[in-house]
Length: 601
Image 1 (cartoon, rainbow, N blue to C red):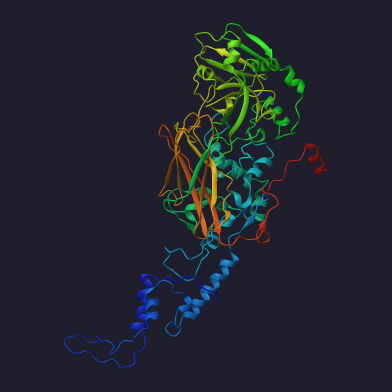
Image 2 (cartoon, helix red, strand yellow; image 1 turned 90 degrees about the horizontal axis):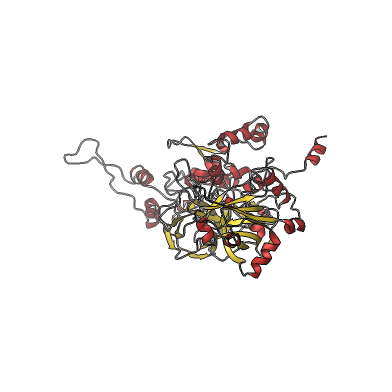
């Protein structure tokens, strides 16, 4: 029999055991009738069996006692108990949580290991009862049980999904992010609160239900959790950390916290959701890195024109190269580190950028037109294809936060980022950064510049107008259940942002939000991303969940928080001891229409 875990004996078990030894075992001397005024039938043993200190310690449930320490003469049923321990040892081995090696080399264990029976349990029949895997079947539940890399899933969808992934940031797409976009988003999605309808149609529709149910043994509980808390069918991925055993709780977690605003991304890492609002958007997408990745013609740059019109003294049109040359000679060209954030970027999302931009201030372009008139309210940024007419307020011009950008990361723009030039406005939604801009139309219109359609919204609001991602504290690069070395420092990394506001503080919790460790950020630049790192050293083998949140300078707190789980192991497994995955998605990469037609023949 294998070495057993510590045996914890509860008060109820102690009472029963003590009766067995002290009251029910045969006495060496005959029982004598009692004397005095006692009731008939009252008896007491003439003498009581004495116990050794070790035996008494076992009865008392002393620390360090194990199943193997129990004296079989005093516990004649121990053989049966041994069988239970052996059986659950075998089940624990057979149903050990799966460890996967992902295509990028990271190892993950999505379900915590139960290193001992939950101490809150009062039935102690073995060292482990494999609650997570044998009873809850947790390894086979949740989106990532079938789709190990949700980014790959999005990349391979037959109907092209907006580019929600960011490979350079290594953000991990999760169900939480899917619901952020697919719940309440008027103007972005056709129907509100229809994510469940969509998922049930995909998995249980006539095209996929047979494969889902037979090959993958999928059913309702693959995605849902049903319990008696009155919440009905919950989504497993949103509630699993409250259901699983074996997660180590760390109160007032301590670590090494740092921030950095100077880390930048090259152009390849600058996000572009490729929304494809119109056919011109589709063409940019098709020519860009997520399409054919074409090299754009120099002639397009050389012949591109910029027009400044509207509420100015002298309208003009000039070629882009001529404007660049004139601005350089005037010392007006700006090179700076600047952030770009999408107002629809969810907690955990990759729709953020901190990069070096090179451009001409819009204020200089307007001054070249004789300046704007006194009643000016703002400027419309018009694309050459006419697909965007967003505007930004006059104060963005006056503060030089609006620029005509033609280089990112020191390189001329590629097709994805809007070759040959793009508008760039700091401290507002990235959708004002209109690609392939050709006109700045100065306006005196009365525009609501906070409106999400006409102006520059900062964050996404739900139906109650509550900001859902302002502030946004995000953890990057940690897939669910990432395997790490126990006893060695592990560094969590991510970003925190609040669009036009500064972040005042960040907080970290490793006990499900019961306690929080707070760090003040001090004075930061709101026009640059705040990258953070938090280094923690696990001391016990097992799973840990880290949750992050933030507070802005105005006192706004995170509406949504992000939680990630790691698994700290004393001995890291070799890749061949794990399930090695060659693909992160059940959906194969796209093939051309021509190739698909050939396969169908």
